[in-house]
Image (cartoon, rainbow, N blue to C red; front, side, top):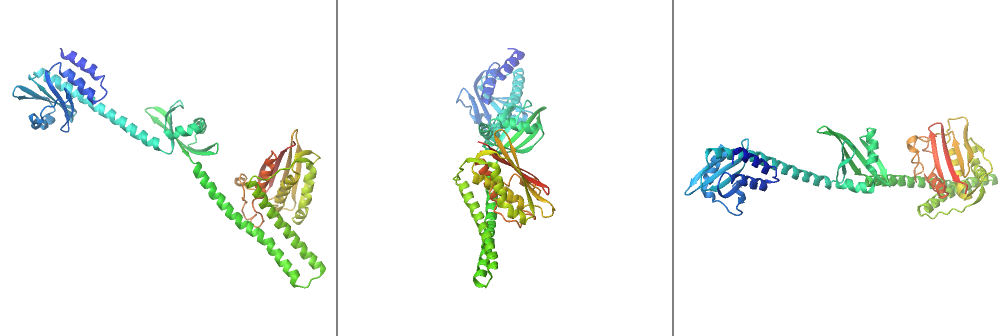
Length: 466
């Protein structure tokens, strides 16, 4: 067969090769077309890795001394041995020996055949090197995919059409929980946010994105970390801190009226006093006992909210009457603080728990009075009523010290108090607004707040009429 035909046949066979064994099989088939082969072995690092026929091995003693010489020359060599020849054909690429073919034949090849075998060995070396590289790449890919799939972070790669081309195991779990997470992430990517957090169904995810270029194609690498547990730990720490502060606050709040009651009663018991002085002291004792009652009521309400046992007893009431009664309850406190309460309401009937809604309004009025701005000459609290088709809005607005914007989303949390130099000396447990919010929501309503530090604070309570 012509050399050209043999090369064409070889290239056809090589195109079907998928691993080293199929390469040696194809190479053996081509060599048999030009050399009469009794046995063929392939050795690497002095070990036989392929044989044909299977399990037929050529004695190493017959060629072992010549192997180093052939490896150095990188050229086929045939050694005469009694009635046969032992051929050593190095498979190489450049100066790197990859394997050696050992064949047993009855005839010595011609020079032309030796050149052809040399060419086959070189072409096989290139193929073998590529096969090993591909095998290494496949194993490396499997290795890194295993590492990536063991990661606690979700890893997603998007192609230039923003479609996922790789998703690791963790990312698949997250997508099963949060099917629209990729769309949500892309919304942030489009506005060039690289680091952000998202929340879905009480789960929190920290996202980082990176745009990379691979062979001229734009890809987006996305890392998704579930930080729900970290958020919960952070929240627990904050709650623990708030509870610690609450215990300190409530101890102080209870100790102050108790100390006053004790001091005034001891004075009455141990010192001669006129009837007017006794009446004055008893008035102080009475006011302090009312303060204690308020504290205990807050704690009782909080206990009911925590155990979900608070009852709402609705009846048909005139909301304007509830507002007026609330204003009367805080009028003495407003007078002492020189705060003017301005009420603008009309008769509107709604279904609600009169006592609880009055508790809501009194709490809002009390806070407005307590946190009035002492530096202002005119201090006021305005109470307005807005009537819609099926809802009513109670608006309590003051011109007090205001609430910082970064604290507005926290003021309804249990035990939370806005602590600064303006509020430090003002008594309170931090339960009032959380109780107010719960009462309003138990009525099917909502409460909103807006404020500007040093200017005003406005609470809007929206309640359904029915």
